[in-house]
Length: 365
Image 1: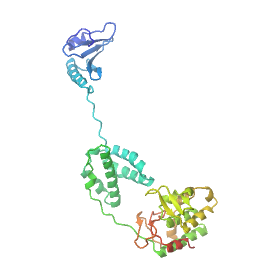
Image 2: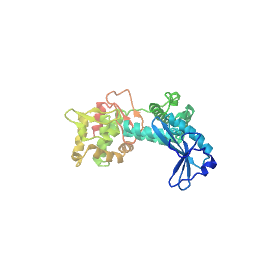
Image 3: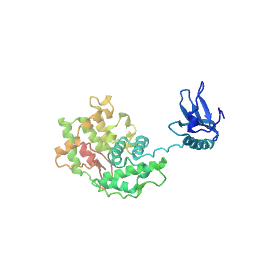
Image 4: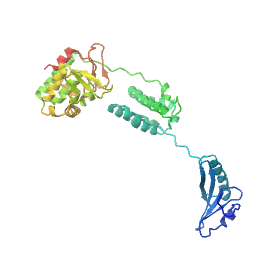
């Protein structure tokens, strides 16, 4: 061990030490490895130097005057023992436990952005920001208990569907917290919370309603009261059973006339194919006949028009007695088993299982 004169370091002896020409270290005679560095400026700093498994290590303890010699000696004994055992000289402060806010950021960034569609990303983001974070954001992930989840769920009892969706998102977050080792396995208090019963909001347009809607679309196209591309988009929704976003993002490259199908690369259920029926091909041919139709992607033509025009709302107003559905839930029935689904722009109502008779009514003028 390097050293000058060994002496017992006390308040008096330390204050009597001075550096001659350059900084000097004086070591304690009772505790090997404990010393004080004396600078030419007169400043004195307690230090430790000892050898551990990784080799020699020198650590500064503190300045004389801010800590006493006895306090420095006690701390030095602990530090020397930790170094010899291969541990850090000072205990490492435990990392702050992640909060629900931290978990939510990681959930949205690492899971939702990577695995979910644009609509789901928007929906989950709103649920997290508007409901979960205001109630639970400051809690540590491991501190979330069933009573917290129940209180959040109950606070949304006026909107049962929203309450259940919020519970589902929170449960997914806590499930991933387990996978990411943020909490012990089995720590998901959402599992035992009972969901609200959701009232189904499903209906179908009747054959007569389809005919009236077809006439309204034909009249709007004929008198120019609505953009013809928007009318075509509504017809594609009705004839293909596609979701609104699938039609809005449709590209000409997705139309395979040889195979007779629309090849949707991205949809809620993943890539899928839709039969290209003569009725659908007629609508697409009508779009091609537009001045810009042949030179633009379908998405460039359809999205701006359908995004700004509430065609179905105008259709309901003009038809007057056509039913409206603003619930955002699927319109379903067991009566017509042929086609799956089509959505209108204003209400997101879904129309499923359009039989050929109805498709003819929609095309008719």
